[in-house]
Length: 84
Image (spheres, rainbow, N blue to C red):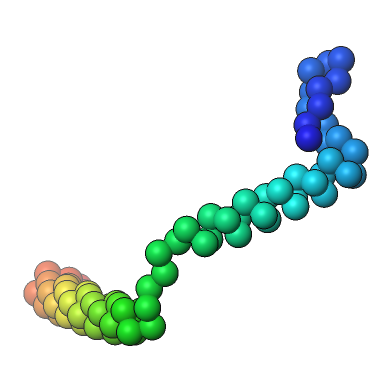
């Protein structure tokens, strides 16, 4: 529990107040976790595969774009970047 002093500043109450707050938080957290609609193992596995496949697709796309841009810069340097 937070109490206010004469100056209006907040400070932590007694140690018993602190531990009570932590216990209440943990108890409320367990209540909320019971309300969660958890995925079944099959759904979790399928979702994991989808994520891995999408990461591979996006990584391949970014790699291809990076390679293409690098080749364009090399070509531009060969054409316009000759040393005198």
